[in-house]
Length: 136
Image (spheres, one colour):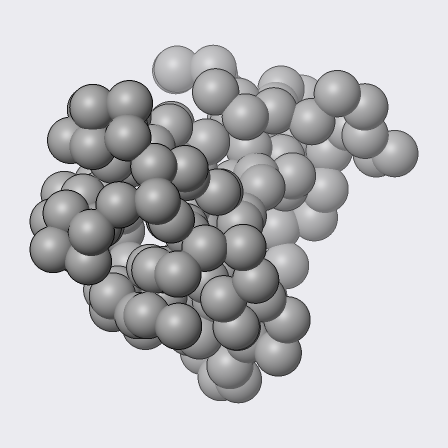
């Protein structure tokens, strides 16, 4: 799974869940000919990214190349089960990548359009956001 090697701050503030705005960076295909573009907004965990990557890789069976265009660098903390209130912030549990509409999540090249579309469709089932298949 993807995880940062080193972080400036171990625990982050959660931030406000603002439901406005679209992505300005990472909205165009940069590496491959086919891509999976986000149409929703959510936090995608490192486990979900890995599950989507595996689904695509297994379908194309060592054909083509896959690029992951997102990285989970935001730490999410969790307190232990049945822990009383107080006692500070919990330990880091997992990492997420905050996603806005318009962000390219994955790119592919070196395979046919039909094969890429099916691989991306399988990957999209593993993600919490609505996605769209795009081509160059």
